[in-house]
Length: 171
Image 1 (cartoon, one colour):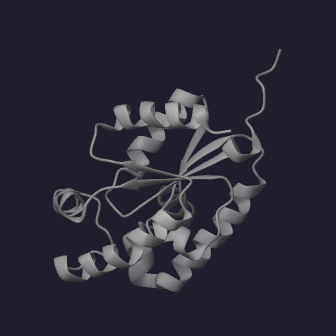
Image 2 (cartoon, one colour; image 1 turned 60 degrees about the vertical axis):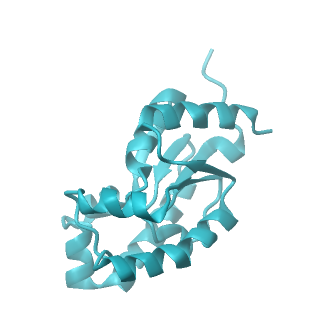
Protein backbone atom coordinates (compact mmCIF):
# COMPACT_ATOMS: atom_id res chain seq x y z
CA UNK A 1 0.00 0.00 0.00
CA UNK A 2 1.48 3.44 -0.93
CA UNK A 3 2.07 6.01 1.83
CA UNK A 4 -0.85 8.27 2.64
CA UNK A 5 -0.54 11.74 1.09
CA UNK A 6 0.30 14.48 3.53
CA UNK A 7 -2.58 16.72 4.59
CA UNK A 8 -2.66 19.75 2.30
CA UNK A 9 -1.40 22.11 5.00
CA UNK A 10 1.58 19.81 5.64
CA UNK A 11 2.38 19.22 1.97
CA UNK A 12 4.71 22.24 2.03
CA UNK A 13 6.56 23.11 5.22
CA UNK A 14 8.40 26.41 4.85
CA UNK A 15 11.15 27.35 7.30
CA UNK A 16 11.35 31.12 7.60
CA UNK A 17 13.50 33.41 9.71
CA UNK A 18 16.49 35.68 9.69
CA UNK A 19 19.77 34.74 8.03
CA UNK A 20 21.84 32.48 10.23
CA UNK A 21 18.95 31.07 12.30
CA UNK A 22 19.52 27.53 10.99
CA UNK A 23 16.76 27.06 8.41
CA UNK A 24 18.90 24.96 6.06
CA UNK A 25 20.38 22.71 8.72
CA UNK A 26 17.15 22.22 10.65
CA UNK A 27 15.23 21.77 7.40
CA UNK A 28 17.46 18.91 6.25
CA UNK A 29 16.96 17.13 9.60
CA UNK A 30 13.21 17.78 9.58
CA UNK A 31 12.80 16.46 6.03
CA UNK A 32 14.68 13.30 6.93
CA UNK A 33 12.57 12.78 10.08
CA UNK A 34 9.32 13.23 8.10
CA UNK A 35 10.43 11.31 5.01
CA UNK A 36 9.96 14.46 2.91
CA UNK A 37 12.21 15.88 0.21
CA UNK A 38 14.25 18.93 1.22
CA UNK A 39 14.98 22.06 -0.79
CA UNK A 40 16.97 25.16 0.11
CA UNK A 41 15.77 28.05 -2.04
CA UNK A 42 19.10 29.91 -1.98
CA UNK A 43 21.03 26.79 -3.02
CA UNK A 44 18.49 26.00 -5.72
CA UNK A 45 18.75 29.49 -7.18
CA UNK A 46 22.57 29.49 -6.97
CA UNK A 47 22.68 26.14 -8.75
CA UNK A 48 20.28 27.20 -11.50
CA UNK A 49 22.17 30.48 -12.06
CA UNK A 50 25.65 29.00 -11.72
CA UNK A 51 26.52 31.81 -9.31
CA UNK A 52 26.57 32.20 -5.54
CA UNK A 53 23.75 34.24 -4.01
CA UNK A 54 26.34 36.87 -3.12
CA UNK A 55 27.47 37.11 -6.77
CA UNK A 56 23.87 37.22 -8.04
CA UNK A 57 23.24 40.20 -5.74
CA UNK A 58 26.51 41.85 -6.78
CA UNK A 59 26.29 41.23 -10.54
CA UNK A 60 22.55 41.20 -11.25
CA UNK A 61 21.04 42.98 -8.26
CA UNK A 62 18.59 42.20 -5.49
CA UNK A 63 15.56 42.84 -7.70
CA UNK A 64 16.70 40.11 -10.13
CA UNK A 65 17.27 37.70 -7.23
CA UNK A 66 13.80 38.39 -5.80
CA UNK A 67 12.30 37.66 -9.22
CA UNK A 68 14.09 34.30 -9.23
CA UNK A 69 12.69 33.57 -5.76
CA UNK A 70 9.16 34.38 -6.92
CA UNK A 71 9.50 32.06 -9.94
CA UNK A 72 10.90 29.28 -7.77
CA UNK A 73 8.01 29.51 -5.29
CA UNK A 74 5.52 29.32 -8.18
CA UNK A 75 7.23 26.12 -9.37
CA UNK A 76 7.36 24.65 -5.86
CA UNK A 77 3.64 25.27 -5.40
CA UNK A 78 3.06 22.97 -8.38
CA UNK A 79 5.11 20.10 -6.93
CA UNK A 80 2.66 17.50 -5.60
CA UNK A 81 5.07 15.69 -3.28
CA UNK A 82 5.59 16.86 0.31
CA UNK A 83 8.54 19.22 0.76
CA UNK A 84 10.43 20.90 3.57
CA UNK A 85 11.72 24.18 2.16
CA UNK A 86 14.35 26.42 3.76
CA UNK A 87 13.82 29.95 2.49
CA UNK A 88 16.24 32.79 2.16
CA UNK A 89 15.63 35.43 4.83
CA UNK A 90 13.89 37.86 2.48
CA UNK A 91 11.81 35.38 0.49
CA UNK A 92 8.71 35.21 2.73
CA UNK A 93 8.58 39.01 2.77
CA UNK A 94 8.40 39.12 -1.04
CA UNK A 95 6.21 36.15 -1.93
CA UNK A 96 3.09 34.74 -0.27
CA UNK A 97 3.78 31.18 0.84
CA UNK A 98 1.11 28.46 0.96
CA UNK A 99 1.42 25.73 3.56
CA UNK A 100 2.82 25.53 7.07
CA UNK A 101 5.26 28.31 7.96
CA UNK A 102 7.70 27.69 10.78
CA UNK A 103 9.56 30.72 12.11
CA UNK A 104 12.94 29.78 13.54
CA UNK A 105 13.63 32.61 15.97
CA UNK A 106 16.96 33.52 17.51
CA UNK A 107 17.77 36.70 19.42
CA UNK A 108 19.87 39.26 17.60
CA UNK A 109 23.11 38.72 19.52
CA UNK A 110 22.90 34.96 18.89
CA UNK A 111 22.37 35.55 15.18
CA UNK A 112 25.15 38.10 15.00
CA UNK A 113 27.61 35.70 16.64
CA UNK A 114 26.64 32.94 14.19
CA UNK A 115 27.00 35.23 11.18
CA UNK A 116 30.44 36.46 12.27
CA UNK A 117 31.65 32.85 12.31
CA UNK A 118 29.82 31.78 9.13
CA UNK A 119 31.90 30.99 6.06
CA UNK A 120 28.85 31.60 3.83
CA UNK A 121 28.88 35.32 2.84
CA UNK A 122 25.51 37.06 3.23
CA UNK A 123 24.87 39.84 0.71
CA UNK A 124 22.78 41.92 3.14
CA UNK A 125 25.25 41.61 6.06
CA UNK A 126 27.30 44.78 5.93
CA UNK A 127 27.78 45.82 9.56
CA UNK A 128 26.19 45.21 12.96
CA UNK A 129 24.04 48.36 12.94
CA UNK A 130 22.43 47.79 9.54
CA UNK A 131 22.01 44.09 10.36
CA UNK A 132 20.21 45.00 13.60
CA UNK A 133 17.91 47.40 11.75
CA UNK A 134 17.04 44.67 9.23
CA UNK A 135 16.46 42.20 12.08
CA UNK A 136 14.10 44.61 13.86
CA UNK A 137 12.19 45.21 10.63
CA UNK A 138 11.81 41.53 9.71
CA UNK A 139 11.29 39.74 13.05
CA UNK A 140 7.71 40.93 13.64
CA UNK A 141 6.81 40.15 10.02
CA UNK A 142 8.07 36.58 10.33
CA UNK A 143 6.18 36.15 13.58
CA UNK A 144 2.97 37.53 12.08
CA UNK A 145 2.92 35.09 9.17
CA UNK A 146 4.14 31.98 11.00
CA UNK A 147 2.01 28.95 11.78
CA UNK A 148 4.54 28.06 14.51
CA UNK A 149 7.40 29.93 16.15
CA UNK A 150 10.32 27.93 17.55
CA UNK A 151 13.31 29.22 19.49
CA UNK A 152 16.30 28.11 17.40
CA UNK A 153 19.01 28.00 20.06
CA UNK A 154 19.04 24.19 20.48
CA UNK A 155 20.91 21.68 18.34
CA UNK A 156 19.42 21.24 14.83
CA UNK A 157 18.47 17.58 15.43
CA UNK A 158 16.66 18.55 18.63
CA UNK A 159 14.79 21.36 16.85
CA UNK A 160 13.73 18.95 14.10
CA UNK A 161 12.32 16.54 16.70
CA UNK A 162 10.46 19.40 18.42
CA UNK A 163 8.98 20.33 15.06
CA UNK A 164 7.88 16.76 14.33
CA UNK A 165 6.00 16.82 17.64
CA UNK A 166 4.45 20.23 16.89
CA UNK A 167 3.38 19.18 13.40
CA UNK A 168 1.83 15.97 14.68
CA UNK A 169 -0.44 18.07 16.92
CA UNK A 170 -1.58 20.33 14.08
CA UNK A 171 -5.19 19.63 13.10
